Length: 178
Image 1 (cartoon, one colour):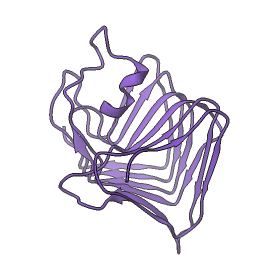
Image 2: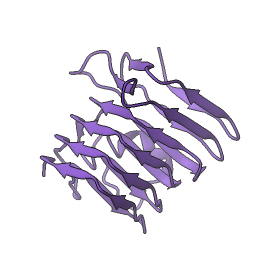
Image 3: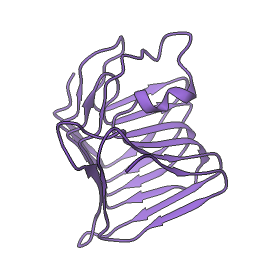
């Protein structure tokens, strides 16, 4: 029980078929120059989700981790961040990673996200993916049914801020609110 952190220069490999269940408002943070390799398969996807869907979990956070992180054949569902932070406020910082980007938060990090499903995440701002000065590569991924319910910049699917610009290829981004 608790947050998972891949610390500076660390590495975490998650094998195909693993189900990572969070039992409360906890998440997984990939720190400076750290590396996450979560490479599932079509037959054995990796799942990141909440034990209790109503409570949710805090999602995946890539903070200054570089461009060598990979999420492949992952299902990222039921993240729920709802702290009231507005990224346009002058005091919003990278340390606020636990309040932005429901499923995936990228700050100065460029993960590869391929063949994933990012669905049913909710909260205030950018429920699917939040990019701040980040350039992730997102291919063959479904981003669906994510809900943003507050804040100045609402976006259920993908929100890019502070020069963030993901490269998106062959994805389905549908039924996100608003």
